[in-house]
Length: 618
Image (cartoon, rainbow, N blue to C red):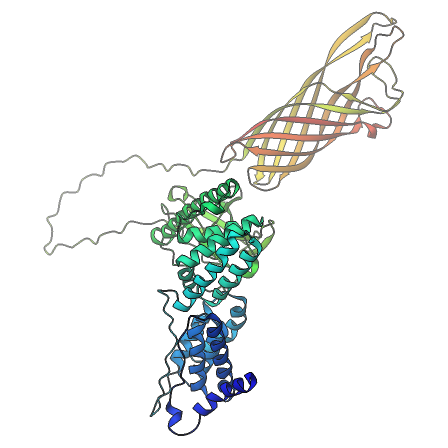
């Protein structure tokens, strides 16, 4: 019996579509009832009928069928797409475009799969006019009003709220979250504004609150935080009902509310900066489409006394999370600035007018991923874009010529004026001075003679005295420098008087070093590592502890003198914005290239020297 009834229902459209007077009759769509199951069955039946009419190219009846479906299920993506196809087939292009464009604002996965085809079809029917018939059949498009939530949706939310309340009282958190997720999931085909309107109803807001409570009790804290934040956007003073409250839940709820207000504050500050960028600096509003190039940028015009505004947009597929401006003003060192994200894909930074005092400005832009990797470039380090400062000249008013010949004045002897001297252009810091203090450790091989005449019997290490150093240098370029380092210290040693093993003496011996050095710096940030090398002369002493027959150890020393090679690794930390004052630390390796004492195995004479101090550029 039920099978026969179902066949009969499916045959109704065929009867309605019969030739004759019935052809012009509009398909009847019943009213929405209080019975949710009956409403669902009616929508399903008319959806099947619409599909059958669409297959038979009866686009009018197909459109009427899918309109009826949307009356019962306002946010059905499939029904709206098939309705658009039916209007398209009827050559009612204005109505088809309206339905296609509605689908473009949906944010569900199913909608994303349809959007490429829809955009293509919209481009094809963009300028087509609706077909005019002698006896047109009026087809009413379903309401797209976004001022209220549809009554059928409100009724469904209210019914679900009654069932969920019983589950909340039973503390069946799993079923609560599942049922609310299924109910709110039916709104996935709606636009963001339509979803907000339905969530803002009393039932919708209460369901959001219950979903957050359920997920909190299931220990899904991140999901609970997102749901509570959605509820705060609708009503910021919403509260947890007393019968579901606990100390832990109330603390979490308050923490989420505080974070929400901080986020709102940050969003408003960001909107203000966007308005400043567009209104004060004349930047055009951000386009909606994805840029055609990886990093889209138009160079600004550099003018004296005016700010420089750098704006770029980055393609979505790059996965960039930051953009940096790498620049060099005149012959100064390379610097970098981070651009702020001011839009969906737009990044910007403004150089204040008082800093725009250069003559030339070379720069490039680099987009970076979250892990610091390079995602894209505009220009490059090897081929940066060059800006030349444009000096704004005052507009001269035209001088009006007198109609009559002016009275000639006697020629006066010009008064000699002192020549105007121009202020010298600011030059980059080239020279530097570094003062430092440090110590060293020397490697002493076996069979080396000490100052007291003893012979070492094993390989060992000996400490050197404190050494005070001064380095004077010159920057060949921002990353290359030459320096002359001089170091001086005093080493205390002990020995025996000639022919004696009892009478000791103490002696302070000067130690020095003089090296010509080259170093290369990496980067131009606050911390600047460097590596280099050099060659020079040195007289080094390292302590050797020698045992005696009397039991009193002798603090002897081993001397290394002659020509040394120097390998240096270190870093400088800028203490001022221009790096005029900086902290300096380095490690030196000395190798005795030529030994003045004529020792064998001079190649085994090595020392490590550590030093740190302060430097000044001028």
